[in-house]
Image (cartoon, rainbow over all chains, first blue to last red; front, side):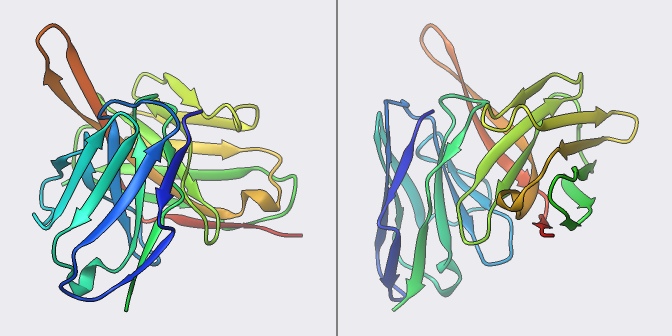
Length: 108
Length: 128
């Protein structure tokens, strides 16, 4: 299995802050990396696919970068609705996908 | 706008079989793989398995011995059965569509897959 490790596990930030979340794969996965946002009691929502492609309808303040084993999700200016848990997911070994453990983004 | 509606029993006793169904509305059923993913309370996401309209399946090796995913193309539905459940199977279970994008490279084509449509989730609790 390809293991995905996110850091930090939790993060406190303020509205307007720039925030970066990191995801590391246990082996090279090229650009086969997706990011999801999950709010309490809701299903995950796809934000970024192929490491840096913005899913339709997702605000442009979200961006992704990286390739190989190291990836980042950046929110350029936090909005109140962005406080949620974020997951990375590798699709390199599709169908056997795996997710990171999540990063909880909280209001400071 | 594709929507997934899921349902099934929410309370099971140990050793019973979990059974969930997901219906696909408003879009193509063929041409995609349809997945089940679960999330234990306070924990991360685990892929369980998937099926396409032809009935071709892929399962997580860690659950394969207990999982059966089936499809009913006449109703645009797919189902999950998980046998011999224990408390460790307590989770929110989601159905989801595996979407994808093809990118043409210089020599090859590259397919980037992702879960782009999700059901709302069904909470399943296993307790004696």
